[in-house]
Length: 257
Image (cartoon, rainbow, N blue to C red; front, side, top):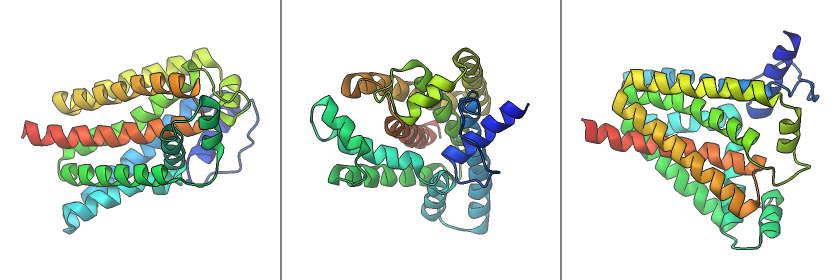
């Protein structure tokens, strides 16, 4: 049980700003860390449900409520995935050779295309969340979407080659008990699909299909553009997956009504 608890602490210390007891980032503690990565999505999802209910009942308009809900994930994670998204946008837009793209990922400076990508994603996320903020089914499915994005990200880490063999992500993969962690993540994905479908079959299927489509694109893009994945590219996937799930829910909510 101590190993499991230490893996839990390591996951939350690494991927969130939620206060946790001091975690030792040892290889042993990373063994089951990816099993708990989606749990951060559970926290974000529960708080999103509470926040949207609170703000809509308090009389805030949809745009304000949608913006607050969209920003909640960044506040909880500290922007770790958004940082990877921006770096990856810069690298993809550079049109350089693979090695140069990998260097851009590690560059702490933000380029113009990273800023443009971040602004575009923020506008799309806020406008989409504003559309669904009063639709309880869509909010519930989006809450599950935060868990799904992290579950698929974990599966990607275990199955994709690592573009940076000495990076933190590669270290996570080497330390993980891959077979057991993969089984857990697949079970998570199946449970999330069932939960989404139980809330609303059409909206749930649309959101889940969108996440899978983004995941397949992520796998292809990571291999062809970078030779594998890195922590930044995985962060790009989490952001794109969540924004497009929300966009899909916004569209389907209008069409279903």
